[in-house]
Each structure stands twice: as structure tokens, then as C-alpha cells.
Image 1 (tube, rainbow, N blue to C red):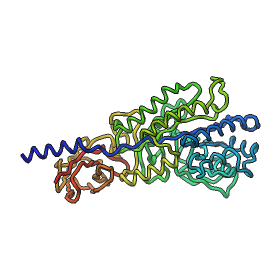
Image 2 (cartoon, rainbow, N blue to C red; image 1 turned 90 degrees about the vertical axis):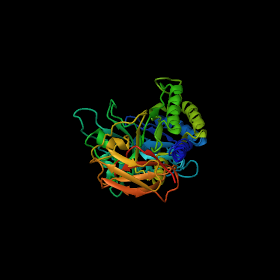
Image 3 (cartoon, rainbow, N blue to C red; image 1 turned 120 degrees about the vertical axis):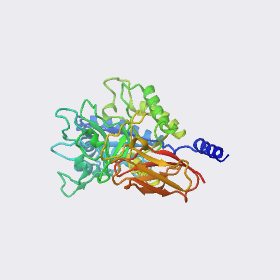
Length: 434
């Protein structure tokens, strides 16, 4: 009879309790200025400015979020053709202040692309001259050079942004990145970082090393998972369906619940005017259609609109409440993979048994025991999370055998994982019964 009641109790909790609540897709719009775009003539600048203002008004009117990622060519256009340094009506300051809270609707990021005349600190300084405030976000960068020789890193590599940068043209001005965003590779972009989440890249020895979390680093990488681009040739219906598919996977638990998910819709300045590819294409009209579809997903609780800084703030809150230090999950990935950062990390996609560790009994009542036979667990901890994703118990597992008391915990469904400073195992269900 006692055994039957235990089985019924276990079935109740496994079916009656959901897993750690799945997050929504934190989503925003971003656009890049490219070096070749010419805003020296008033006609070129005003044409792009007028379209950009329509986009900013559209974003604000439909409660979306937008990261405008600028280079000196466009900023100089604003300073020259709109006298941006002495007025508050230029498009950059207008975008930054729209909605009443500066940077809340539109965030202004400096672009990473630099040359002999300026660096990213100079870009930040020029943005500030307009009356806006440049963020501490690197707006797009190259994390891996896919061209020969393999593994070499050139202009655009992320590592310079881990230190404070002094402006070349204004030596009294310095800038330091807090977030590096939009990791790509040099063409043909076969090594683009399509991982959801937030982490601190460990190193640049190779493309895999970039994906290994290192808490000693002082700059966060914000991954975008599946990033979508709206261009004159985009199949808008297919793109909307794909965004809905990803947001649904996150919400319904197809993707792991203990992850943090970011997404971005890219629109590019080169497509703001009448396109040479499709003369009838107008970015504001196309973007309006996409935002309306995304807002349906917002109403369904599948998507949250956020700028890059707002995503990072949400991650910080999520990390604090879950005690999970970082997060990664590849775009489109639905099955667990072999860990890529061994032997210095714990494979977040592998379960406890894969590492030769056993935790028993399950269900547990007063004491939980563990044993392991593996060299992975240097400076590692056994962590127990409740059904809301909060870490309720932590135990160092430096010894090959040990126990921890769960007597003080209320009965219910929990999740247990092994974690060190660089990684974590796949969480395993644990029932505590009394």
C-alpha cells in the first residue's frame, strides 16, 4: 500500500507540476549603417532620414523596440545637414528621446567598423555630439575569420572591446563596451554565431572557444539565435511563420526552460530608400506588417519587445532568480549535443549519468546522496532548483561521495544539475516527498 501511494504521489507531481517556466522570446529590431553608404550630399541624407523617421514613429506607435546602430558617415550627415549639435530635432536625438524616456524606445549603438581615421570611441563621441547618448554596446562585430589562414583574427575581432578605448580624435574621451552584440564571421558567414542567450566568451583560439563561458571576462556577448533580415527580396509570410515557430518552441517547452532567448529583426539603411532590387518596396510599409504580426505573438505571451540593454537587464534578473550564470541554445536545435568546451566545462546538454554521477534516492525525503567517477568536477557544485527556477540548495562536490539534507525543503518537484564556473549539466527531475 505504501509503495502504491508513493507511485501515485510521483505520478501526481510529474504530471501536475510543469517544468521550470519557459521564458518568452526577447525581441527587437536593429539596423546597420555600412561604410560605403554616402550621406555627404544633402539629398542622400534627407532621403534616408525621412524614411528613418517614419520607421522610428512606427516603432514607437506600435510599442516595438529598436536599436539604431550608426557609423560616423550617417552621424556626420546629421551634424552637417541638420545641425544636430545645436538642435534637438535631428533624427538621431529625435529617435533617442521618442516616448519620453531617452533610449527606452530607440537605443543608439556605435557600429564596430572602424578605419585609420577613427575607432569605436570616436563613433560614440560623435553620436553624443548630436544630443543623443551612445550606448556601451558594440553594434555588430566579427567573432571568427573564416578566410585563410584559419583561426586568424583581424579588424572586427571582439577582444579589443574588453578594454577601455581612447578616441583617436578626442584623446580626453574614452569608451568601454559592456555588451558585444551580433557576432558574425567574415564572408561567406559560415561561422556566424547563431546561439540564443548571453555569455562571456572565453577566448579566441578558435570558433568553439568563443562559445565557452568565462566568468573572468568583463564583457558580455548577447546572442540572437535565429536572426531575421527584412529586405526587398524577403518572403515576409515565411519569415513571420519562422518567427512564430521559434517563439512557440520557446513557450511550449520544445526548447529548454532553463535558457534565456533573444531574437532580432534586422533592417538595413541601404533598404530605407526606394530599392533598386524592387522599386515598389518601401521599408516602413513592410516593417509595419511584420510588427503587427509580432504584436499578435506579444498578446499571446510568446514575445517581449526589448532593446539590447533591456534584454541584458532582463537576463540579469533571470540569472539572479535562477542562479544560472549564463545561457546558450543554438537556433533550430531541438536535441541535446555533445559538450563543446570540455575538458574545462560541464556539458550543459548532457545528463548526470553521462558524467558517471548518480544521485539517489528519487523520490527523496530527508537526505540526498551522490557519487561520481569523473574528472570534470573541479570546483563544481550540485544545485537544486524549485519548480519556479529558483536555486534552493547548493553543495560542493569536490569529494567523490557525499550527501546533502533536503529535510527543510517542502515536498514537490525539483530539478538538479551539476555546475561549475563555465558550464552546467542538463537538469534532472527530482521529487521530494515527506
